[in-house]
Image (tube, rainbow, N blue to C red; front, side, top):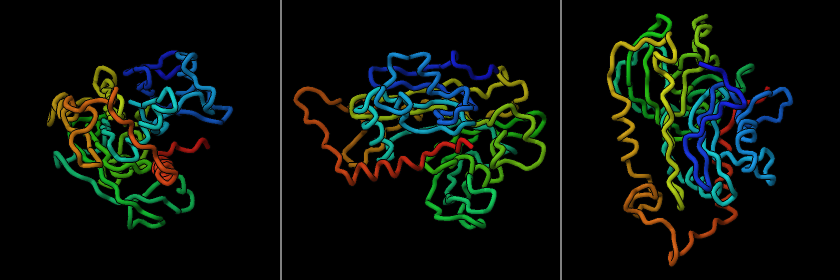
Length: 308
């Protein structure tokens, strides 16, 4: 597969207020480091110079984060009001996200919920990483939940591997990577939480991809499904041999699932029966300073890997 470049930005959703792009692997969202030759921010400026906002440091408002090594769907708000509406969806845990991954070994259970609490690792030399509760040096572990569905069993470069769909129900830093590692099935190519042997010399990338994203804002339903990168036609090292769950069926389930409604008042904005705001309908109440501070604190958990 071709490496990332300024020119090959893939847009999978566009409206007046939002863009969703298919971020390339091994590309940072933004960076203050002078040595960073390619970032998503630079790709956006190159493709959409007219959309850059001079009131922001980087020119674009990223609604959430993806690790440097992770590819896939990432939402960009094109104005302050749109950013605020997306932030509230993340704060209220109304966003639906699903990832594809190749993990080491053949996962035997077809479906499972992973619920290891995740905290920051205070061990010397590992302070940039996260860990599960009960391990040495794990500080301030917080409840974390991930749903896992096994799609296929196969081989990657001759080693047993499973293709899985991961749905994070909480938003901890490196959550999917930590949970897969804790199961004994680390993500292929994960040099931080993967196996210490020379096995991880083989993959050209970390095999984690943000596949599906739905943000039910009050004004529009931002929904995007990105192409599956983990297919033999794109990576000859991946050789699936047993299909357990068709991916297209799971996509239909994701699309049909009602959006979480924190008020308990019915289906969310992405549901067809839900009226969108319009003339004669009262605007949503303004957030208080306490609510805004709480939102920013929650968003801070969606952190990038450090530049250094």
